[in-house]
Image (cartoon, rainbow, N blue to C red; front, side, top):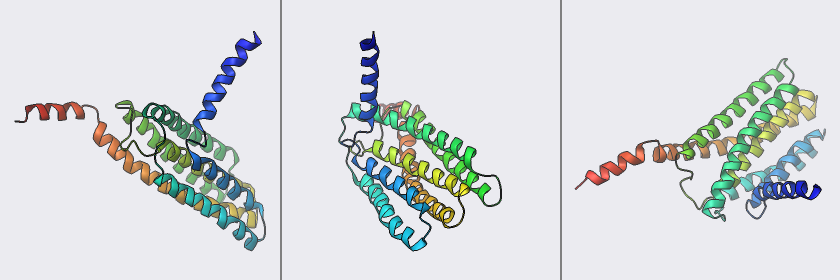
Length: 227
């Protein structure tokens, strides 16, 4: 009996870890480490020392994003489609959880109230983008440019959003330099997230233009009727 229970659990755990395998998305783990470091060092009260710690971690985050845009896809078509479905679900889930976390921890007074509205806006944008992606890809199941690692970029987008929301929430509960550091960290990571969003919006436009329902049939009919 125990063996019958352990085997499915072990299989499910192995499958879950496979989605986050560093060999498949090598820059994702680096970006997570940079995001964690950026939030952690905000508690350093001395501003000069905080900058010394902040700048290398932020440079690493920027480099991981740049390398992810440049990275080629190492997955087979079937593996990439499967992992992309998981990554899209993760992006929506992380946005929902970030919004809930912000709502539970951000104080509703003064400037801090604006932190919640910013988090609400960012999370809502990410939810809408990946819900539309899910709809669009249900028509075809793939993205234009199969040699690009979309899974890694999807996970990076979520990582930047989660850390942005986390820093805004932490800024609400801190005072003095620590609060200021969390705000600046949220702004910096928010900029990286906006770059990701710009990429996804451009990609989504391609997906919708190529795979819009009925478009392929119309093109096929036009092609068959042409002399």
